[in-house]
Length: 362
Image (cartoon, rainbow, N blue to C red):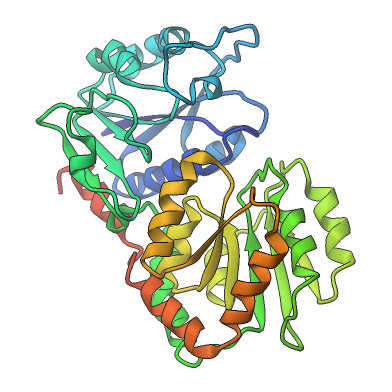
């Protein structure tokens, strides 16, 4: 079976779209599928990472002078081309491949792009989080808490199957494998190790702002901080400099290969309200989630409402006050334990297997 993915990573949009597609592709490859990625060469791309996983990469050229499609999706500027230019670049690749599935994970693409390329694949799947535009697809995945198939009524064909909710979250197998161990160590919780992860790029430099706010908090004696950054994060050196000035031992980790183990060994996490939210939930890690982009508000609101995390806004200007209030609360063990239990109930970590079975018809 041939499966083609259309997804991008960049300094502007981050790495989450490509990373969750790679997770799905890895699972499908283990089942014998041949996976191809169609990716634009944006600054901050992950082409070598995808190749390193053994998948074929087809590089789409950047269109630096391309106009933004004013009538397109809200995130049209993320594409680096018009939808028509993108479709024309993808067309010869898909004509040659004729994939069994074309999987699209891109906020800047909608029904116009999908209709133009649908003749060159047997079936088409969309991965979305926004429910803000129409699609032409056979299968749609929205892995967000609180999302329902009805949210896509009128946006997808009536015959389209909609998979909605974190039970379909595309997590690497390591998280499900570590789930039991991670939950056991939280039976008697404590706050001694804090993990800070704002995504692979962290364009807003939220990590530096969090470290600065934490300096004004009171943490337990012996507390240790671990900061995870991507190798292409533009603020990496500034974060390293800030880490050396922290009152507690603070390590900055880049290109982390064992994120699951790192999360499982952490007592608490401060992170962005993106796809890593489901990783933290799977392992029952109590967390503060920061809204770094408008498209993360739905996730953060639903997690906060469920008691699975505490959401705070980066834009309110009083990050230190917000962090102190929440961290003070989480130094009470019963609060840590309650949040851990609620977080673990959100996601069991085997969503990629469920989605894989749908794609392979097994």
